[in-house]
Amino acid sequence: MDRLMAMETYISVVEMGSFSGAARRLKLGQPAVSKTIARLEEHLGARLLLRSTRGLTPTDAGQRFYEHAKRVIDQADEAEQAVQDTSRGLSGTLRVSAPVTFARLHILPALQTFLDKHPNLNIDLSLDDHNIDLLGEGTDVALRMGELQDSSMTARHISQSRRLVVGTPRYFSRTGIPQTPTDLAQHQAIVYVLRGGGESWSFSQNGREVAMIVSGRIRVNAAEGIRTAVLADMGIAVASVWMFSEELAQGQVQVVLPDWELPPIDLWAVFPSGRLVSAKARAFVDFVDNVMAR
Picture 1 (cartoon, one colour):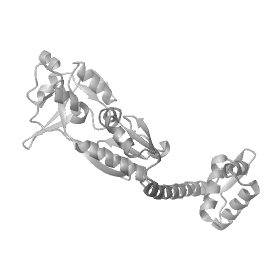
Picture 2 (tube, one colour; picture 1 turned 135 degrees about the horizontal axis):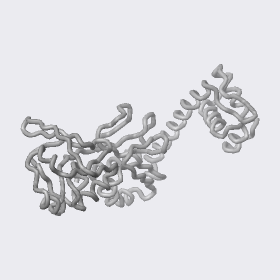
Picture 3 (cartoon, helix red, strand yellow; picture 1 turned 90 degrees about the horizontal axis):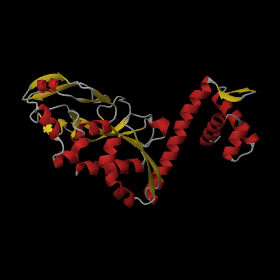
Picture 4 (cartoon, one colour; picture 1 turned 180 degrees about the vertical axis):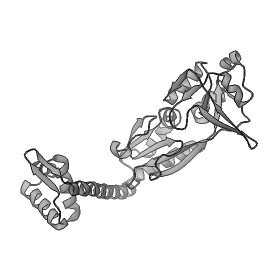
């Protein structure tokens, strides 16, 4: 029995819910599909499917076999694609997830150079500050910031940025410039409530540490909100250099407490667990690495 073919047939039966549906998908006769499943069950010594008037559903053993078989077939497809990518160059569609503001400021402006290098490759770029289910969304690679919550994921560290306390000169002309972390209690903070943000910060200077809780009337869950509120002179923010790199260079945003250090933030490339990393994904991460090294 051809095991890969049997797995593909079983996967199609489960996903289509019937032998006839699987036969149409695979362009086979229904008797051939039924015979393959019967031989598979005999080979495994277990019943994989429950038959009812509503169709076919997997047994507990059948569900476990489906999940493992799906991973095997996916990996076989990825291995084949990796060889094709090597011999023909990168092609097809690369599905990427990235934080909205970071991608807008740093990835999209440089992306044309990557596309020019790989003319047969398309990019499906999903922008979201929240972490998504990579396998569920069919994502090839995700750019993520901060600490990785799932240690089982395959990840590659790309870069690291300092965090700073920033505000506009107009805001500080109204409120005065804080001289120590404790002075921040007198300021309106724009608080980023997603991972790596929050109200509690630990400042350090020459071995001395000061814990500080900032507060304000505005809390947002997207970096675009932080940028907009700060640039509208509404308050201060703890932010990475990445978030305000252009405005810092032009003097539109001012750094305060420059002699105090905050925990840095890391940029990672994360790949779906249990899958081979494609040549397309590796090439894209190399591209991001080069962008951030400039």
